Image (tube, rainbow, N blue to C red; front, top):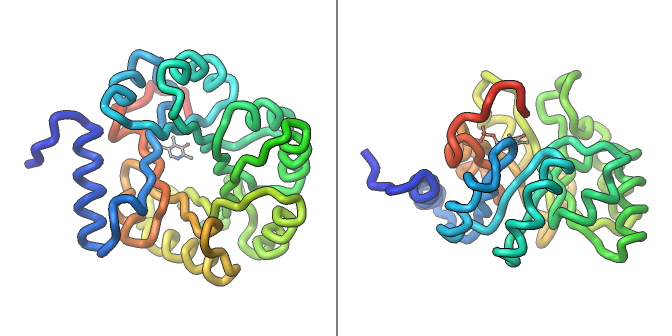
Length: 228
Ligand SMILES: *Cc1c(COP(=O)(O)O)cnc(C)c1O
């Protein structure tokens, strides 16, 4: 059915197909290879194939795996895609190039402090609780305008909006809604990123305007049970 020699090639081909249908350019889409739970030996082949953007969801796991890999591939970009506890803000700022899970005032305060201390600014996606789910992280939709103002007031570069739609329902309307929220809140230029789409729905996300897709299983295979 497809001619891909590796999972990475297969995902790239799928991205190309979706871009063609959506009349978008490939270089508008950043593929984040989500390597959480996978050891360095599984990550190296992707680095060898030229993949340079990776996502992890736990600060400590990333600290254990990435310093060595990055020494070999210094142009690697590391994205934090998982929920972040405020007490890990210093470590996250030290290690990651982009954070996708800024979602609440207490974390904003911790990250701003960590960035001030480190003398660097790490661009952050503001995660939105797009399905209004009690158990999920993300800024409540109604609080988004005020929260974006608060992020700006702390001088944290906004990379855009991020969401994880509810499981087991069609994701497209949630992706479209995140895109609408970005427009309604005047996010453009470097603030206009949309981090949405995972292995099961990244084609749909590209059709709906995703700029960053977070793909794990389609690249690495299934993760062991008990992990994020
Ligand atoms: C694990 C994870 C992904 C990747 O999910 P797959 O279904 O394996 O592609 C994407 N985003 C977030 C926030 C994740 O935690």
